[in-house]
Amino acid sequence: MARPLLLVSLLLVACDSAPPVVLDASQNAYFGSWEHVSNEYGNNIVSDNMLLIFHPDSTVSYKRCINRMNGYSYTTLPDSRLEELTNRQLVISGGVWILRLTKELPIDRAPYASGDQMFLDVDGLKLRKLKDGESSTHETWKCESEEN
Image (cartoon, rainbow, N blue to C red; front, side, top):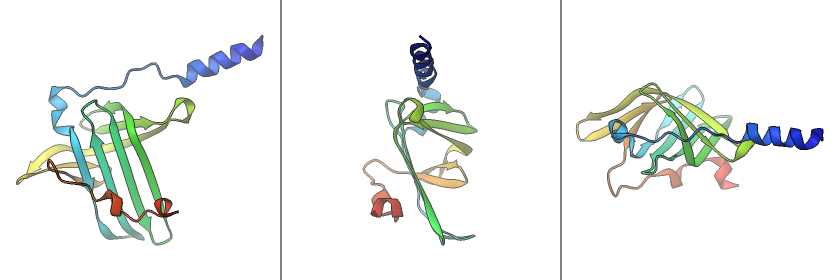
């Protein structure tokens, strides 16, 4: 009898009953594709690239590739749940049940205009909003995990 109860308890803990966050009209500036592409940072970082897409259904796609002299880190969360969005923090999660990965990204500056471009400062990077019809360069990023 203890096994079924334990299984049910684990399933209840694994299921996230909180609904995903839905962007409202005041957060409309976030919708769209944002990208940061840069090389030769110093401190052993060769490149640090990020793609962040806020979809019309309030899901988020996230991809980041950091190449260092001695290795790399690569994270991708396609069609993630938006858990939290404030002017100071973005929290997204992707995966299923207990295999969900949650990523907390500090927002250094909410979307802002500079000239005819829009920018968003996230996790220490300045992302530029891609214009309608403009494609991301993410397919050319050199993340070793993608080459294998």
